[in-house]
Amino acid sequence: MIRLIIFIVLVLALDFYALQSFRSVVRNPWVTYGYVVISFAVFGNLVFQGMTFERGSGVNSGFYLAFSLFVLVYVPKLVLLIFMFGEDVFRVFEATVNYFVSKSDESSALFSSRRKFIGQLALGIAAIPFISILYGITKGKYNFKVLKYTLEFDDLPQAFDGYQITQISDIHSGSFDNKQKIEYAVNLVNEQLSDVIMFTGDLVNSQSSEMRPWKSTFSKLTATDGVFSILGNHDYGDYKRWPSDEAKAENFQELLDIQNDMGFDLLRNESRFIEKDGDRLAIIGVENWGKGFKQKGDLSLATSKVEPNDFKILLSHDPSHWQYEVVKDPTHYHLTLSGHTHGMQFGIEIPGIIKWSPIKWRYKYWAGIYEKAGQYINVNRGFGFLAFPGRVGIWPEISVITLKKRVNNT
Image (cartoon, rainbow, N blue to C red; front, side, top):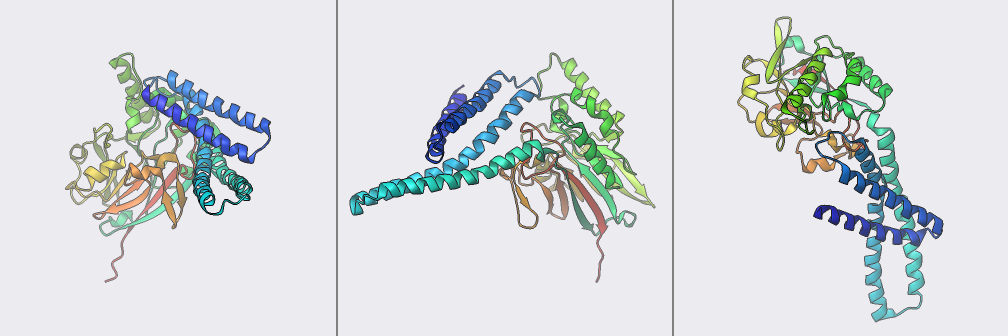
């Protein structure tokens, strides 16, 4: 309750300051009234949804919608605040200097004119995040991107030179609201014509029933060597309050059955082998292991049938597992496939120039390809979305990774 009160006070302070800045630019009182009404309606709805939202109830579309509207309305206000607060600090400094030095009668008019100009500039710049967030909510969450990578290895078996993997992660089917877009994305996965498809966890948000309407759609995923999958932290049903342990167990069993019905080969601390022309790849899948999350992943159990000289591809949902356990493990895992972070569904990416998201302050490895100690990881940005029903700058991803045998020219 104390945190809620602090949050309300901070938001109201932001609203009051932003309103003063808004009124210095927009003189029409009806526009101002509309601004106030919209602000209080959006903020009031968020507070109401937050106070009535039970954390153990699973997905709450009302709260997520309220949260998305709050982000849409209040992030631009933060931009406005930054500009106008800077102007006010400079204004106080300048007024002090004028009072003791020049005492010019023209200063008041100059202040008013400059403040209006700064306000207009701030409103223009604040429109950028508003439009970006609006696009992210309406279009960006289904703006699927195919990202292609080529990785070279000295010890890749010759028969697998050019072998292609398509990875998807974090489906979060309980968030979907557009069947046509999801069917398009599934077709896009199949159009890559990869040798194998690998899904790295979080099929649902809270409970297995979320996947029922989408089972036939994802059953269409197909590849020559099949579809392999693992569990993510959301797949265990831990984010919903169940009436009994039996109900939770039944939910989990249904999720396992759905994966089997869709043709997914689910790996739970175990391995499979793909054989080709006398060579083989080891596909290793562990249960969820994450720093601050469930830690059921068991590398020793998962590799019990794997030989030291096998080429190893590890499926592990949370990239913190790679950071804290996999890289330092005695077994050399050539390639790890993860997801989990979603790239926070918010950031800025310009290939070859910038890749940034606030999630980097929580996860060292949060999106794309990384290498350490001769081992690679790909952190997929996610297929679906969670909590915030949109994506801004970090788009839903289909990863396509081609394995190549490094040519030794010496």
